[in-house]
Image (cartoon, rainbow, N blue to C red):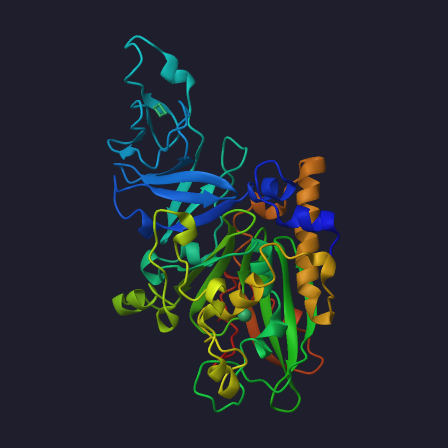
Length: 435
Ligand code: FES
Ligand SMILES: [Fe+2]
């Protein structure tokens, strides 16, 4: 349970809020690179941390992200012309480069220096392995770029990102990834022989243990394995401010999930995945473009960010719930496709769940820890100007999740110490999941 004040602090991300300030210390992924496929292509509307922005790729291929309203008199830069290394507002012709500098002011006297005094609010961007990132913070020099393993693999080893818009607060969505207990319920099939994808485990009462780290935390959810004497540890990472890596289930896949707040009531899940063993094939790339094809796919996007990566199955049609499927095969009548089942749980809590109403149990240990960590980090920044260590150390996110079978009494913390580091030179510790 959280007090009303703490819940507000935790969830709100707009400019000037405590949590908004914390998030703005970090590089944030915000759009797949494919949304700006080539130099001088049409700009895209972006909503991020409650700000309306416009993204464009200039003639040199550099990406700009700036306030949607022109600094002259506020006309839409989305309607602007993206040409010759800048975006030109079509109202009076003022033109801005990716850094926000006004490079042309054609309606003022030729001798005027007014244009040197005007700047558009612009945020630096990076285009890394298929994902666009930005830094919206106060520093003149952006901090180190996060060296997630998926960001440093050769580009051809990385899949196009998987994307899903969620109509709820980002913390609710993030909490779903650090809550192992739900895998035995919302992702479960009713019998082991059901053909649909789903989980089926004997032990549905996991014991959680949280390990604090300098970049956030990781935890193990321990269950009895079906072979006597063995225990299964699902080890999931949380990396400040909103990244998760769920327990490994493949010997070659590395990944990171981001729960990116568009604003207080919407978040975009960006799942980045790459292979250690080989390049991704064209066919595999194609398959990732519409991960919800089996359940209606995406609605056709307009220019509005809220329509992008928004699935046909959504809260307004009960996610196309099939009660027959729920009666005969799955716990819930929605298939186990990416995080659709999870989303049905987190969105129906309401846009921002009132956490004064909840009753937390032992399996919520990681959720409790991560909330506290976020709240403390936001308060420390506001009160003392202190940022978490991983803001300035881009290598701290070089970690892996793990999944291991261990004899009773063995410590998962020491057993997986190397497996939880990207650069320790050991294989991924994995157990197959969700057949
Ligand atoms: S409002 Fe953009 S140039 Fe005038
Ligand atoms: Fe889940």
